[in-house]
Length: 105
Image 1: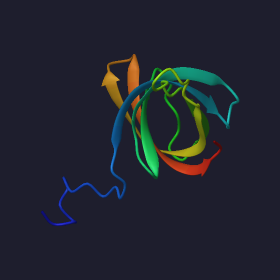
Image 2 (image 1 turned 135 degrees about the horizontal axis):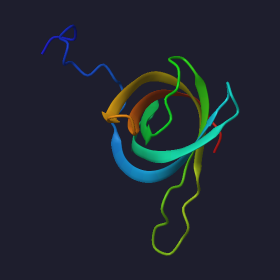
Image 3 (image 1 turned 90 degrees about the vertical axis):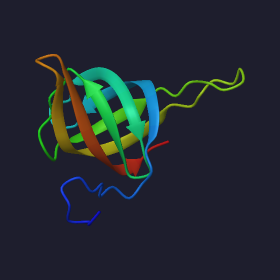
């Protein structure tokens, strides 16, 4: 498949499926929303929420990572930039693709 093909995946990082709760705070409005981190990679993540951000909007995201072997997970926090937003469930759920700008944890 050519890198110019419409279906070619241009993302560099391998994505890991997550399914973890996430807190999403708009750095533009200051409002907080809740959702789910669907997948995570070295340079980005996909979130699902009722929130519809603007393209290029900066967000602060905290992903609640589950514990392993009785040890509680440390939350993953990052400042991100919105790259896409697609409707998943009409008028209710949107998938937000973001690029990680700064890892805070």
